[in-house]
Every structure is written in structure tokens, then in C-alpha cells.
Image 1 (tube, rainbow, N blue to C red):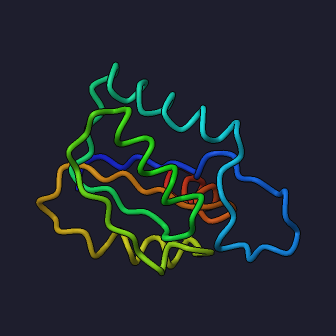
Image 2 (image 1 turned 90 degrees about the vertical axis):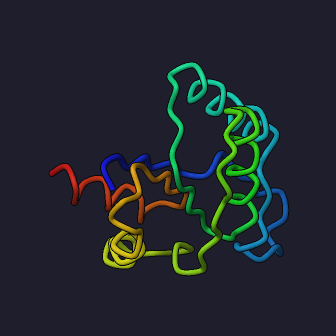
Length: 122
């Protein structure tokens, strides 16, 4: 793998305090900004070969909206281990990507993604 793109899920809704965290949807703002990120990726010709996403609803919806707007044919691989993942868990997910994969988009949650970014970049 030569390129890694990290993306936190778009803004999620907190309308229902009773809803399970895993099932929280995107907010109206998140529904607007996720496609915007896809358009930016398309304009910049960012086309990851592999897309790995948390299966939580807000991450799934983000991944779907981003790929559609970016006009990317990549299939999304939803991985349970990305939800609430630590840096070590995310690194394990990335280590399992085949070496000949040119680029990966990882869509997940904070603090895991922020911690991973800090660990990789110092």
C-alpha cells in the first residue's frame, strides 16, 4: 500500500438519546457534507483502490455518499474491527491489506482515526 486516506464519518445525529450508538444516522449537515467530500475527491482525482469502513450506520452512510459523489467504482468493505478501534486495531486492519494495493481509504471514528494519524505522522 502506497497511499492511505483517512476519513472520519460525516456529522452524525444526536436527536435520540435512546438510540444505540452503532445505529446513529447522519445529521442533515452530514448528509450534505459527505457528498461534498466525494466531489472534492473526484476533482482531485483521488481514487482509492480499496475502501474500508466501519459498519456503524453513520460510517456506512458516509462511505456510500462519498463514493457515489466521487464516481468511484470501488466496493466498500465493512469491517467490524474498525468500529471503536484503537490505533493498534486500525494498524492491524491496514496490515492485512495486500502489499500490491496502491491506495486505501479508511472511514471510521474518532478518537481512533485521530490517534492513528498522530501515530503515523508524529
